[in-house]
Figure 1 (cartoon, rainbow, N blue to C red):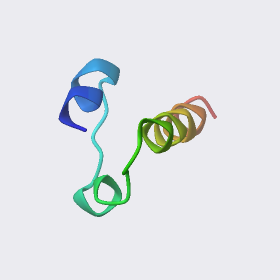
Figure 2: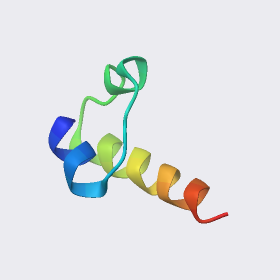
Figure 3: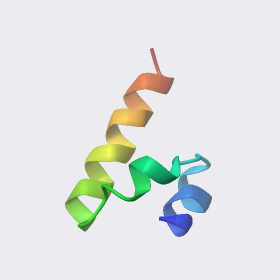
Length: 39
């Protein structure tokens, strides 16, 4: 999760990071945050 934070210049709260168990879940979370930032 820390690598994703560094790579995509974002902060993932600990409670959200605990929910990310797979690469797919990480991608879904990153896409969701990216869409939120672009609105």
